[in-house]
Length: 607
Image 1: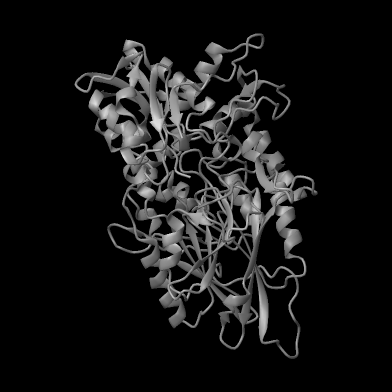
Image 2: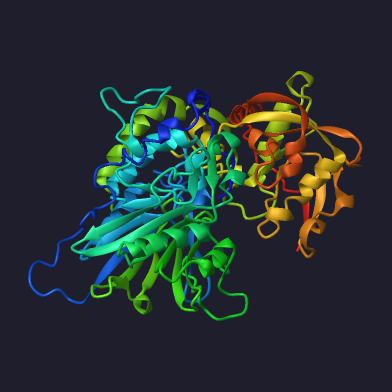
């Protein structure tokens, strides 16, 4: 999902020290030997003798893990399941200990099994992974026997040089090695970025595709991220890179694979859609009015050459198994497995040994819940315990107290309780004259990565908010900016929530107390924000007046489709968003008087 990119202190220094992208040049050359040419060989082979004409290849896939090694807490850790009577049940899911067990169980009895991912494996990660620049997640993915992944937008959060390190290994250039005598090995699976090239040379940043082979069976994988990645990642993260059209890129490399005799092709695309139901077991191909899937992936799928046999997608954190017609009108499977390791997709690709192609009419696919009532994989438990010991001194420090869950990521409303807390924390921290003199604060919804959950995550006790939990909510550690904007620019920014690039999928900014307006969803485009209702402390916004506005540096750069916010002047750089959040929790809560979920009465919604 679009979000503020992660920029913690260390990565700032790394980016400052990185002299362009020179170090990435050796990336492809330094790929692990044979990484492009291996099946993990889960299960046994067919042995000697007559080979049947077709063989069933099992494609297991998932997307948007975001470093969630431990089961995600609160509502963010549930998947929705529609019951036979039509009611919807929430099932707790996710956590790599269970994901490993699910994948290993699914592979049993499938001699031809390949595991692929749709991007955003790392970035915007909880403290357990984020504190260590996501090395724990790469290590876990190696242990899960991941064969290949596309890059997502979050793989660029810390820039191309850090992405190269995640692929190739080596200790962090500033923080060094985290464990004595242990050097970070990097990913033993290829990261694919077919539509990302270096501006200076025009050459691909990473491998565009890889070919998985086993006993003469060959399947090509092409990986792309969304073309709009630069709009949702800070300028530093994408410096020196160009992002190209997804369809044109996939079609180009599908032709190249086809010429090389690879006729079975899967596209891994970090872009997605929205199904008509949020239940993972929704029949996406049911013919009812309003059924099916919408969003960017539909047009992308319709444009991708019929040479590609299946599409594994992501980015929207939705669950779907749909067919979308290819350019020749034939149905083709398009899948996504929610996020945070809560689901995995099991797709059967029937491979014809005579044509070396997939028999498209027999492709079957389904999403499965990574339930928490199955045994934990002991190797993943050991991995989590090891990194938790290193993180504990920082992670377990109490920051404040809450009286009940304060929902952020888990809230589907335009105005989220946790969004209000974060915006208020930013306003309070930056209102003093010497801190910027802020009068109003804006928070982008994609930057809120979790809920604040009342139930204890460890031994801290119910209601205690630890540093680790606060970090999981705001893992980017973005620096705060306070800028001058005119009233007219402020109104434009609010209208950009529901117009321009955000029209099809609105991004509703979370606003600090005192700012109120009406959002009329029965209207279209910019008119959905009723201009005459926008008030600050009860007074109408004056288009000619200058206001001091606080926001993170990502929004202040015009990120997430808010060019009006990028027009600010007289900038003052403040503390980080996480520091202000923790300071607010400390100032507004005690064990005896915990912080309660705030009212959501700033945005009046007409539907």
